[in-house]
Length: 473
Image (cartoon, rainbow, N blue to C red; front, side, top):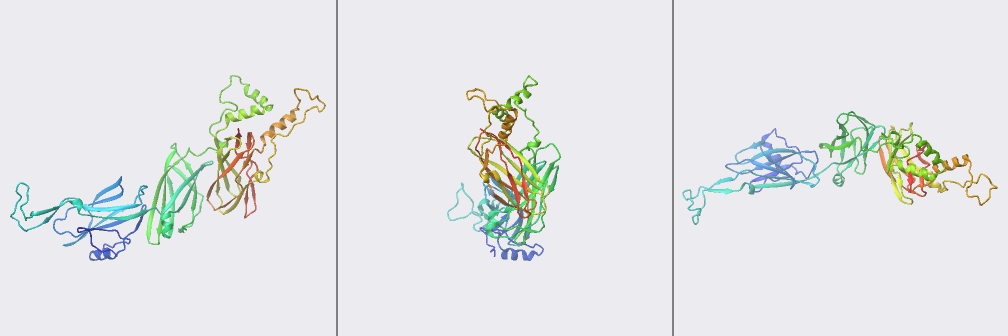
């Protein structure tokens, strides 16, 4: 219950319920019996009421809306909804805007001009040389407007915590992760979502997730919505607008609006669709048109030449997208370092998107890391002539032996995953992201083999094949 007793005849009331203005005589009763608002949400429209008890000359009122010392706005109160001989009531409405520097909103109301109060005693006495006669008073007592004020604060909080995760496949795929804010979880409020929409100017949007509204979002759950975006113009950075209509505790409807930017070029490029094709052997062009062919012939006999050629075209980071489960509509994307030091732990980012209409229970495992088959990359190659003298300075090898040596080097198990047996419950339309820790155990151009995904419900095993090539130095 709110008692209508303000400081110096002025008061602010922030009701938690709607005040009905149809019956003017009941406005004061409603303001007196209403519950004061304790918390307001971002993007919520809040109404406040200012009550004055001053008699005589009532000057204009000003209202400060203060989020922080740097975020303050002043408004002039003009909407007078009730007035009688002794009490006046003004209504003011504002939209709560997010502020990172404060979790409290302060309303301060004050008179814009100096108030004059009549005093009819000793009317004939006058000021002499700016001094007051002893025992007398001025005919008009002045009060500074800023001293006649009243302040009230309300806690402010977002309803949701939101973030976008974006990857680039054949088009931009973005996942909206949505959960309740810490304040809402602590208060135990029930939040029911009636609709979610996103908008990007001049962009086609396809939603993979199918949601039945209204949806009650549990306090400990995260809602994932995946969208495919197709840019229709040359602008690469665009604002993306998310609008969420929800109801808090069954009676407070709020349309939450969040704006962030999306970069259609910042996502990592796919190796198979890279727009830039590097030189096949060196960044420096050769004047001899047959130089590349000659270099290839020499590299067949030299692992060192192979490493040099690989290092000249390897990027520090790269990515690959695997669509090895087309029937299940499971898309896997891996990105990360492709040039590392021997024995140094590094990480790859792994993202999975379930584009099917069914939930998936998955296990990711790397067979080579489980069996621990740390075999040598190039097996010993016998000499071509077994009866050759041990003193021969140059042993002879057949062409078949050299080719076998080359391919065995490329098939090396020189990369070990320290992360294994990752269990994932992937709902329809959901994007999952995690990291794989790896270590290079042998120098050269290596790859992570035997990367598999097991779908528990159906028993299907998806072979992911070749992943990113890594140069271990």
